[in-house]
Structures are given as C-alpha cells and as structure tokens.
Amino acid sequence: MEIYLSTRRDLLVVKKGCPMPPVASLAKWRKSKKRVFNVSDEISSALQKQGYYIRNLRDLHTDRY
Image 1: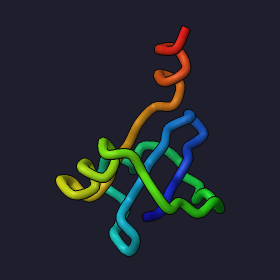
Image 2: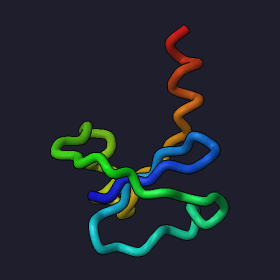
Image 3: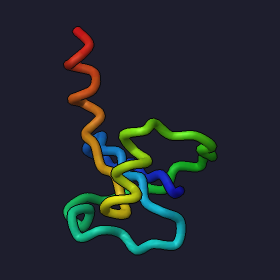
Image 4: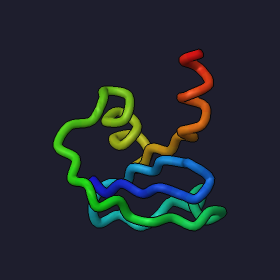
C-alpha cells in the first residue's frame, strides 16, 4: 500500500503499483514516508472494491468533539 497526504488534509491509500484514481487529481499529493503494515477493515475492503481509499482528515477530528 502507498499512503498519500494532500495539502487539504486528505488521506489517500492506493494499492502499490496502481495509478492515482481520477478522484485524486484535484489535489496535490505527497507520499508519506511512513511504512504501513496493517490497515482497518474499512480501508482494506475499499481497496479490494475500488483500488483506493480516500478520506478527509478534518472530518475525523470534528466527529470526536
């Protein structure tokens, strides 16, 4: 898996070797240098279905409070 972060605080997970999805073409992405060994069931099922997983990290913080 390859992990990308955008300047708008979005997270993109793509299967290794797959091209960037058209949905991701609207933002500038930088590849994360951290290695990932395990992902959640939600992310792994999205990778199997569509080949990528995208989420806005700002929404994650507002849901907690």
